[in-house]
Length: 431
Ligand SMILES: Nc1ncnc2c1ncn2[C@@H]1O[C@H](COP(=O)(O)OP(=O)(O)O)[C@@H](O)[C@H]1O
Ligand SMILES: [Mg+2]
Image (cartoon, rainbow, N blue to C red; front, side):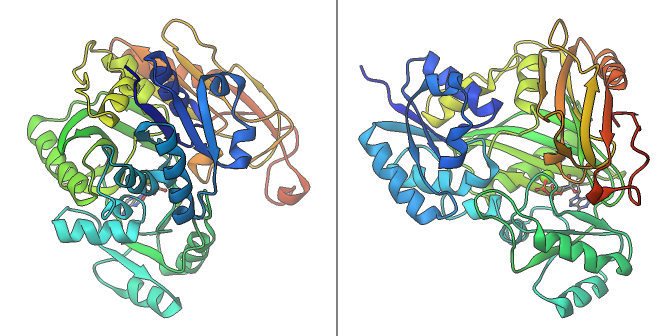
């Protein structure tokens, strides 16, 4: 019997690589839809896993949809998956077009465009921050004067990801610059430069995300993840840890909101990553939802802490097969993101961990001699590593100790030179 083909929308990155490995290992022909520029960077291992690929332009989704559908029909594709935030709407549309399990294409925009998300959440009664779509300076003034917004508030681009262009604004004086930054934020495939920006009430509390898989409309929550995020105007992720066990009543309330959000975004078959903030009073506010497996190595954390093979499960869900979602171990895993202490040229890195017992995953992605940013968005990460352990205390302590050992040397460049950075011979511990 010929197994259905599996198509990945964008196969770049470790998560997509793991999906391709599982699918190929089970005997499926694996295909990728990709851009010409991205395909150049696919490594030999990934290329070796692929039975074929189609080069398309994701910035023109209607055309991409037609081209990929023709390719997929010819190759007997029976499952379409993506781990790329920017392609979740296209994935839902393609699944509908091909008649394979997928999310509701009529609602998929709500998981990609935060203005549509705010509307969908409001219509479904999901508790989410009060949000105003602002189109010009007058609109910004009105929004900032709206008592339901107040200060601090959050200014963000509707179609961004990874904290790019998101600013927590503490007073009116900072709003214009934050709006400008949100306007100018660019994502992948022509995303960004949105005509409108969002001004949102600030939700105070502790950040978590809920990692879920929905099959035929029934949702299983795999884990609650604690997000470590910088404070201040730029909220950049510094790490994730799981599993977190909330008090049962709080967990039930969180899951209720998350499930309402999942339904509102039309998620019927597939993964979701829902970010929430829990206030001191235990009230849960949904900040955003992605119709995909969480990024930032959360899949690796789930695999190592809970023994759930998320990639196999994703594949099963996409093929409408029963997925094994029950934990088989009860450990703990945490990831640390390594960022540069300042903008400049990266001259050396010492002490970055290697894989070994209790450190199952490391990834360094910055080139020595290349330019690096002060952390302003998740894309500014230089590297990451995962630490596992029997419990939270041991794993967190070890991860912090490993982080403290990393020395990153960054020299100023003329663009961000002496006026803005400390002297050239600085060395620093990753924050
Ligand atoms: N309304 C809000 N209240 C408090 N913090 C927020 C709010 N919106 C965003 N943030 C902070 O900014 C980060 C990035 O914003 P988010 O809406 O998740 O955008 P992105 O899609 O870029 O991840 C969040 O993880 C959180 O730390
Ligand atoms: Mg987010």
